[in-house]
Amino acid sequence: MPTHTMKAVRFHEHGGPEVLRYEDVPIPEPKPGEVLVRVHAAGLNPPDWYIRDGLTNVPPEMRPPIDLPLIPGTDASGVVEAVAGDVPGLSVGDEVFGLLRFPTVGANAYAEYVTAPAADLARKPPGIDHVHAAAAPMAGLTAWQFLIELGHDHPSPFQAERHRPAPLGPGTRMLVNGAAGGVGHFAVQLAKWKGAHVTAVASSAHESFLRELGADRFIDYTRNRPEDHVHDLDLVLDTVGGPGSHRFLRTLKPGGALYPVFFAEFDPEELTKLNVTVSSTQVRSSGAQLAELGRLLDTGTIRAAIDSTFPLADAQAAHERAARGHIQGKIVLTTA
Image (cartoon, rainbow, N blue to C red; front, side, top):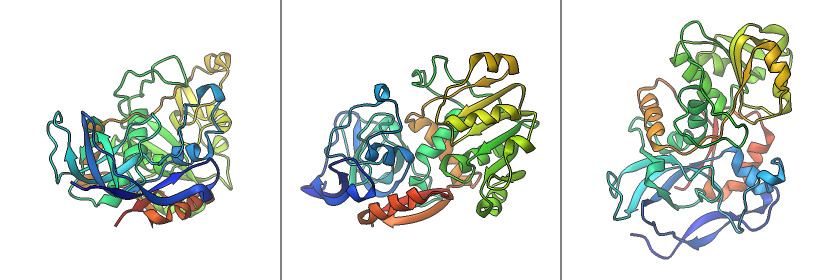
């Protein structure tokens, strides 16, 4: 078992990518129910820069406390280095991946080693490498829990009602906004796996990529407004969400549903008049669901697309890449 210190990325104050520091920190020790993982790759996700910025885009009453300095990151793929005595089913040397501790703050994945609850981990699919495995957890589980199976009973911070995914199958007409990003590109593939007809919305640079993933129709939002061209949809997954999500109500047929990933307020009277539903949730760690995703990744039924990779020491550059937007798939840090 390793001793002493490891390299990790931390921030000591909130701000832009420049606050990220590559430094020596103590190697953590697994507590009961946990394992220590030697990280080979860590995926980037929007909560990483939201927390780095101080969650300024979240209403103050919904912000969790953030203790600094903090190691960001929730997605990791690596090799089990140590196992707490009460953890069954995992052994030193096992390759694993997971969304760690989400939605709590402090998963600490931007590091050479990380402790993780065993329940948050799944075995890494043997058919993919650590980079592609690290790209999958948060984005893949978000798409899964919105579209396939919620899988938990935790209340959503965005709505009182429990989110219930609508059945997907042949005949389902669905639109994915922000389809080229992390959640979006998994959502397109999961919907196609279920047999749905999928309209993908993104900028023109991503058209061939999304058609390769199975999108039946493509709309370049820089040239056309989707709500002017698509109607009578059963479902819209808006991975961008926020106030602009309201425009997609016009694309739904009576009985249809809009799922904004980043929730916004809607007028209940308008929803009743249109006979449509708006529903959201917050992704949560689940090793069991990740194992199901892993089987699809292993067979090539779905794939994790990689926008770019950066060494752990260049996390600042990775966050700068994320800030430029128009990401195709996921950005991943490597520790090799």
